[in-house]
Length: 289
Length: 291
Image (cartoon, rainbow over all chains, first blue to last red; front, side):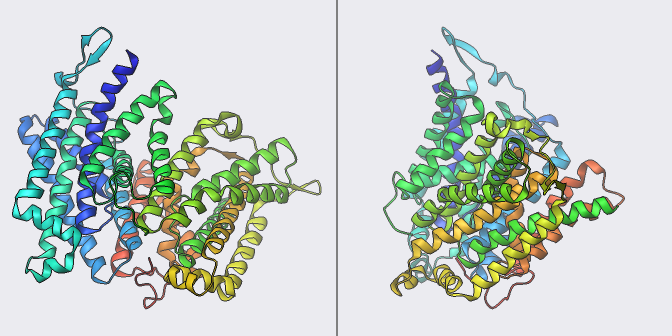
């Protein structure tokens, strides 16, 4: 019974990880930018929703504000940080350090404004009910899973059917050819950042309603997104989402064997193992980098 | 005031060792490790246990620390041989997270969250010696070794690996051996810094060996200028004196000093990367696209 309960908890965590990891993978796949500030989009979205909730805004407005804030952050990062660096052929590490600098700054500003420590949005949706003997599930679990599923279907449809989505996939494969066809690779990378960052918002809202937010949560989210993207295989959205789900479940199920403190280490052991033994990830094409 | 300055100087020397050794692999070998605090921690726990259980001899503590950190540096060398770029950064992030958990949980060796307390003062020939001269000597030795290596054959091999490792291999350089040695040297140096840190503070816990610390060391190297001899040292002194400087600014409440410090160095990292990616002392013409 404990196993089933942990599995259900893991599904909820997994849905959150899958959404953020898919956002990270979309950005990385399309623009080749290792967007380590992705976790900050999550933090910003979560706190915007939290403040909207506290200000008694209707919840749909809070959700919209939160998505808009995440998208805005992604676009600002692309235009003001990544674009200037790439203009002078900055190496990947220059990009990494710049993005990490931004996340340190934003995290501390949020800590100063919103206060440090955990903050939660209390809703009846996160009250658990006993659905089976000894199995407690909150409506939030179904909402999280449904949101993740709907967004994935929408994202897949967008990437395969909509011209802009197809262009995004083309950008991932051959940026030079994109320019030859007269499409703007700059505009497309802004689009990738907007969509990728927006995917973090629903995950952040679910987190705010269940386990709660703190100012350093972006760090954790960023690490998990990187881990899921690599384990899933770089360039594969499906892989990243699946790996995110797996890492969430693994973290939760690991609790049957080890204490809570080890949960995060489990994800990174998986990552470390993958990098050493199968760097291409689950769905990736084997390539030596 | 003297005690304050001596403490600051000792910590600056220790950070200088950390930054210089990290610079050795980041700046010369192109191995972008964000797990340097792991080896700092290994050295600190190793050195502290020597002082607690055997004798508080600083040389023995440093030696043990260097052996432990240098030996376990294989954990970092292994992914460095397998993957590059983003993958390696992710692997070192993973190593850092797992190690921080281990430091917090292996209570018999590390004292857990509470840490190790009451580490005896270092003694030589029955006399208590301050850590500052030891740290300065160690820093000088490491800078000297870096300067020698940089000009010698080994340093050139490393730089060729950083700039084009396939070419280096084609010229008959043993890339794997060179990378492993460079990582072992850097991590052993971080271990020595750890032992000195433990002996200086006589209290250590996992807080000093987390990802934040690794990033701070990285920031010292980047802000000062990766791949330069003095840059990391300048970066270390700047970042360490930052809290002291901020605490003299009247309108910042003491509880926010840490946050303001982090905001300053975070924005310094970002702005430098946008406008001067080679760092303060770096040569702009050489700073481009060293991935």
